[in-house]
Length: 359
Ligand SMILES: *Cc1c(COP(=O)(O)O)cnc(C)c1O
Image (cartoon, rainbow, N blue to C red; front, top):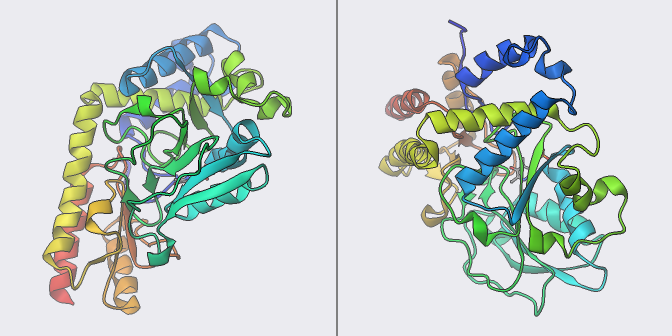
């Protein structure tokens, strides 16, 4: 009906069609109010209600209580790279970073502007193809920073490292709410919405109260987490439309059976692609080691760059879009976030089989 193609883009990424259809209505008149969501005041009752809904939905999925605050900010996940140390890393203290990809490295660079950084572990020696098992934590770090899913390399934590007594900060930009995990194990979670839960332009930040108490009080007002928590994200004009879409995506998740059902689908989708790779490991050469594989981003190389270019060209002609890998890995990257439909994965896997047979 819309001629929509299968969009394997790593981000911004595919959104659920029912959400987009509903948004089309709400852009013109939000829930029949006569005012569109793009035109609606962030100080209106309609906004307040939507805000309460989205917070409640997050808390429900994450099984977290009132000891957490959830706020929505602009500036992308990349702004969190400096906001976190600016708020939580005093000049004389050390923060520990687990470095499993480009995004973690960028986070380290910003943190060094504020205090000391200890690289607790890194998988850079093998181009971030695995998740390190041994970590050297410093004596009393201000926090430990970890990236849950490495979008570019296609690795994702299954079991997180055991950490006790130190606040844990996690960048969940590319896998938030893709599966059940113990969200209570984290003191601060942040995620740019444009991969798994919404559009670009809004970042969700989830902070434990006890951690927030440690935050610095002398930053510019906009750079204090406390400002946004105290004002419930409306100290200034928040990204209203982004919050709206997130709320609708979470609602779509509820209507589709909740987090367990989404997780099952994600495991099934990723399993189909990995299954095909494992069948032809000499042809589809996975970048990530097996025990570090991501459910969200699947990375592999083909025997030659010519074949990779041909693969992408033929896939595109079948409406399988956005499969080109990031330049730091090369090859192919299959991004299959929550909203990516199963029939698109089936089509890709069939194509992978045909392509291998013909080449
Ligand atoms: C995409 C991404 C970012 C950067 O997000 P922006 O919103 O573009 O700043 C950070 N971390 C991870 C894990 C990502 O995938």
